[in-house]
Image (cartoon, rainbow, N blue to C red; front, side):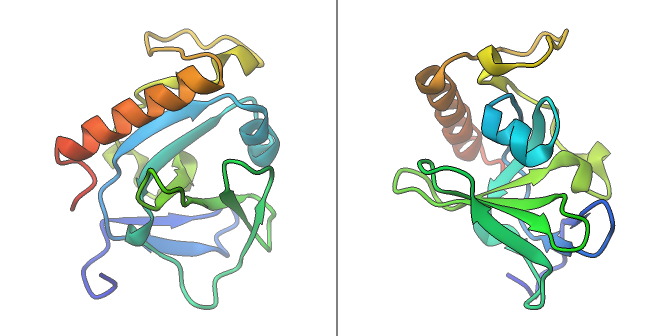
Length: 160
């Protein structure tokens, strides 16, 4: 995988943490959960999701990973230099390994899919005036994510 040309280039805000993606994004979401708010130091997280095996972090990467709360066992990584979100990994039995990359970390965000939904909207800090589906509650948010993810995978996205 690492020998193929990257589809996307990403970096943290300060530029110290750089990595490439060798898979197409599967989807993009806006998450309002309190963990995403805390991790991103923002009212919500706009993240692009892809299969984890498509993320190529250099061996000497400057990412400090930690779990904010189990479950789910999301390893959230921040740049060691600027302490800003870089990349996250989720590995659960029902999913292939997934990666969540803050959309702002892409060098060409115009090439990404549009967001498809809001998750954990009941935890929002402010209303977002858009026409996207707004899912509330843990179970509803997780089911909406799974439905859209598997539909996107079966439709051929994220396989490049």
